[in-house]
Length: 540
Ligand code: NA7
Image (spheres, rainbow, N blue to C red):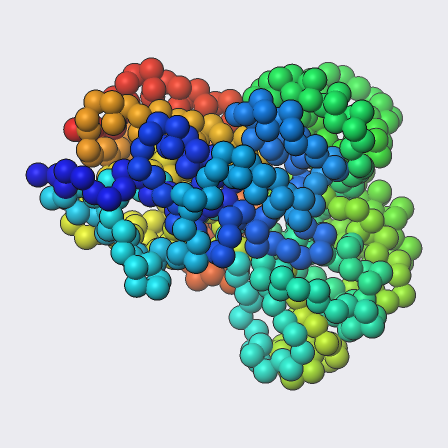
């Protein structure tokens, strides 16, 4: 017999972009709902990542929520690619506007949750010992929320300051005249390096593999421009809906080979110099992803642009990826990143040529030299997509562990449910499009679908829901096929679950942890499920 009345109908884990919208939808349904958030305040990614240079790579006006006309009317994005402090302000603005904060409990890290079949509820244990019980749990724990550090001998002996970018302190970190070292040249490292190069004494970049990176082309948004953007919001969100990645850019369908090489270069000059954000990636010819020769020609073009911007030819060559083509890993966007290497106080150390040996009390030692440092920054990435769920000891039917079920990679039904874990619903879960597209666009799709499912369950008086195993197997096949079609399927990137610092996620251990079939196709699967009245979900 189910627990007639657990204290909560729904507990949401995480008060980031997903959790904020999810709690609003649940409250609108009149449910007894609460958000548990591990951090001291709301904001998720934008609460935590306070490193210099942290900003959107999505156009700000495509990153904001679309669900409220009032929010769209009232909020003024100050920059085309807004920075972390402003983004955090925005999320607070939305939460305060709908009075959501009082439905959130902070400093509430969920460490375990256990399903009770007899009571049909989840028991959640917090790290501080508190306990909660809820009929349903919705996880909105983020896709890049578990930072990972390298395993280098002596890391704890360093006498200067050192931290992962995710843990950049909430205070001014003195940079002036400091000798700073940074490990990692992914999207984060590239933002930090460009931002601090002219603010530090010396900057040494320890690079294992370079990434392709192209100009963000950020600019301020004036009052007049914001008014114009507001008048186009419907159109902007429509484009995002059509776009595979949920962005305000659509591919150029003239046909790569229908243009001459010169025409293609001219077009790429325009995308590189005059357009913004991911334009060179997704407003480009689709062939650049599908055709090796097309990808190679574009890679050569971008390599030439790097050579034009970096004075020292040796350094330029080191900054040009040789092991993967353009767009085959998550593309970082930059503002004067390559020019940073023209400064006398910035140097690049190739740690593939001269690997890191150890951290010492006073700096970093490679096989070739010792580098004296005052500050050591780890921009070394995240245990992406499944990391935050793995960290909670989740026990489903018969005490089975989610971590164990997903040991070799996740398995889900549409990235929202996983068999054996009834009443646990994931927003932005593994194998959804939240890891593969413009995050908030995917979040809104997920939250709205999940809200519909919850409403259906409450309307009908169902107290238990679980995806059927066959449905999960079908989705697995779809996810695998979509990823296998992508040219980056073998890339050493968090896209495919690669992280050299996490056991079982190293090279060659491909994980199918995001859905790469595109946002429109993903949405059509969700819509079909709703139209079929959730026929692949056991509801009772
Ligand atoms: P990424 O993209 O995973 O980049 C991590 C970087 O750190 C990358 O350059 C790695 O080199 C480097 N790294 C990681 N571990 C080591 C060790 N052990 N030694 C040397 N170098 C290392 O993370 P980001 O934080 O930059 O970006 C994550 C996402 O956040 C991004 O896509 C945005 O969506 C926001 P490697 O390439 O593995 O050789």
